[in-house]
Length: 228
Image (cartoon, rainbow, N blue to C red; front, side, top):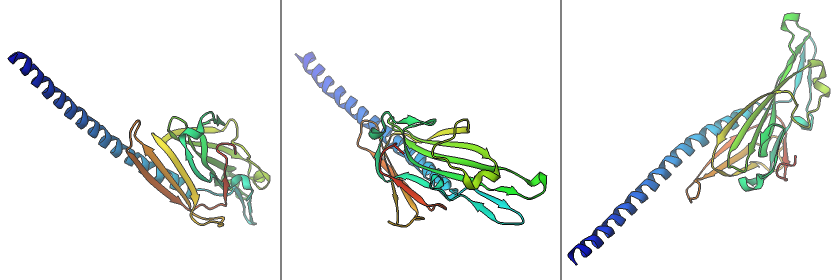
């Protein structure tokens, strides 16, 4: 009887110790996840801010002469208007990126026409795309191509060009949603607010960070997930 009672007390004690260990381990994992996620979100928002600040229309500089600029809608800052959840992005892929587009923009280095031959350069266009995938990854892609300066004023890019140089990276993981909204309604050059929310897998802990970037081009909003 004494052995049975001692065994029961030991069992209760071991259950308590295990529960305490499990709770401490879970708390430690949650704290580590929160710290890593906050750092990742800060870097992601910095990358997004830098990309937005680089948004420009393609242009050619003629010396002596004028600047030829293409302000077509293809080269505005396109963004999904509202909140996009990772669960909404299932099955939306293409053009070399994964997930539904959150925003896309063009960065242009102007061509120089009319200088000495050694100074003449074609226009270099870099396309920045941020997309949210169903696995919770916030992806960043950068496409680059070179075009003749003489064709800048008439060119169009309704889709990402094939054969362009591509760079890809993951800005953040465990992303639950991304909110993308202009800070001033009705303003074509309004700063763009992008809020990223991450949630720990299978838990309630979440972290949010936001970026606010002022573009150099007009904002073009889209209300359909991925279809633009």
